[in-house]
Length: 334
Ligand code: ADP
Image 1: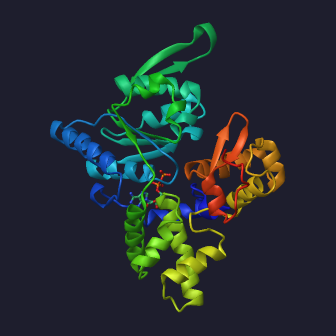
Image 2: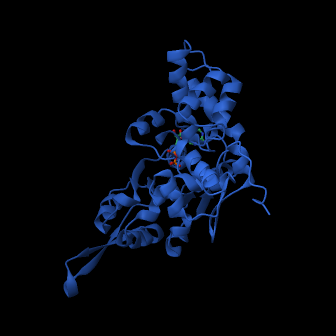
Image 3: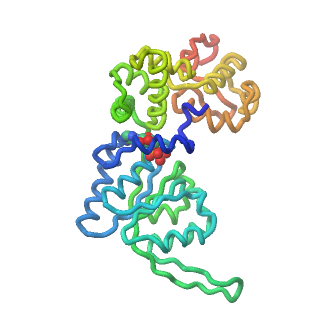
């Protein structure tokens, strides 16, 4: 499954680090976010102050961590990286905040998963550059205010809707990251190919881009698999046909659907005539947990307009029949 998963595992992070754009000018796509961000950074530079806190929202693999690193690089400021799940207690956050250097950029990935007490501490820190350290327990407990250096918080979330309003309101700027179009993904691929020392013809880039689900992380991953295939099977010569053959071998089809995606669609069409069918029935039909179908397969199928979630159950669209090369029953679409 991992080939088209938007999340990176531990080993992949090291490989990815080498492919990250370092400065804003190298960052591909997201034109509006880039322009907004460059204004925020430029005005902070002119005022000689730390810029407003920045919230980035968008799906995994779209470049949020990369942008956080770029913000620090553009400000020539140090960067501290942490994540919501790592901030279980207020003390975890206090330890970081109290050791920040002036102007430091603090990146909190998955900020919607921070524990409540840490979140409340963060409000005060963002607003007044102050934390209250609570000493003691029960009625004798006292809060000792501690000044912290002015810093810039960069938060990233895949679920902006889950952020409590008081936290969201304390960001001066919210960057909404969209999926990339095919032309932008091709540029990402050309850049990565250059860094990896791979000759990538345009039609091969197009072949990889259209299977990459609008996501640079997936594009880079498919590129590495295609490169391996070309090295072993084609003397390192990468063509569009080689790219297609490699990705077919890994069961990533022409629209970026993988085995599970096609199994879900196939069952919906073949066993349930296109639906509507309930999630758990559909999951049993493909031998997966309902949650796997719902969280791993469905969001992309919905985004591609292949499947719809309705109150009566899951329904295939006309595009789904076409994608699998099947003919819908005559009464399927009224
Ligand atoms: P996120 O934090 O949103 O999950 P990352 O910033 O870790 O995503 O990006 C994942 C991978 O995709 C990295 O290797 C990064 O280099 C690459 N990438 C993301 N966005 C871009 C972009 N706009 N241009 C070039 N490469 C990108």
